[in-house]
Image (cartoon, rainbow over all chains, first blue to last red; front, side, top):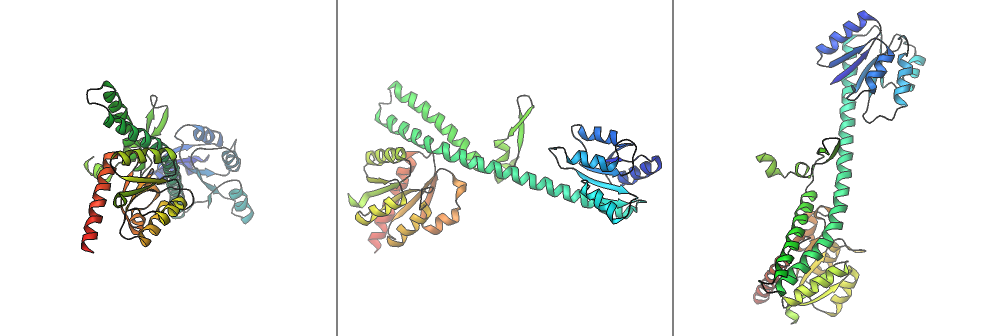
Length: 227
Length: 129
């Protein structure tokens, strides 16, 4: 997981960066609040932030407030590092938008455990978001299938009845067979939509938009095993 | 003719009309109802052997309707015809007494085959009585 470390004190920063890397995190480190803000405005910003309270420029508390005031697409977990250990300070930090805090000087084991807890919260939020998206897709799929399959059934049925009434050599029979084949094609698509079991997207219009990948999202167990 | 009477229940009038045309063409005596309540009214007057029931009906749904039909008339065969397969559980369908289910759009010849098999089965049951 990617972590942003914002700490103005060089020694602390190097030490923290070193332990975070050792624990397997991909660390971006900055030395003030302004830089941290800029990193977090970029695309693909780290989801976990270890933020020192006391920094020149924008301090940790102000940065928390600014970040929480944003309408961010992805969740952000903020761990505040503070030498302000009084209960009032902790309350101020959490109310400003920090998710957790670690008192300085940091105990490495405590820091590791708290960052691990943050990682679990982020994983949980990602899972909730994934389920909500799937739920939305399934509800939409249900509505689309139901609304499309009713008229499809009528068109397919009448096409079949009309073909049965016409001589095989009648050119209209061939036209009706084309209509029927196209209806069957849409029918196959709605059957696939009904088999959607997971949330998968693919790029559309050169990748600038994502659309639900019906084939991948509706992969049946057999197809999955063969893939 | 009463031995080959079919009841189609679907809340869409056009589907009822199309199915009536189709089964009449295929030589069956078919009637239609656009709700479970209307179907239950018809059942009081007429005897049907085979049923094609839409599941998503206003008021009483197709599963409840099937349960009532099968309870009162065990020597019948009911098929579910649904627009959206995932809105119901296959278990519920079987438990309600459906012989099988089809997802719209379904080819008429598939429904004719199902009707034929149903009448053959009912004829066997009657012989064994």
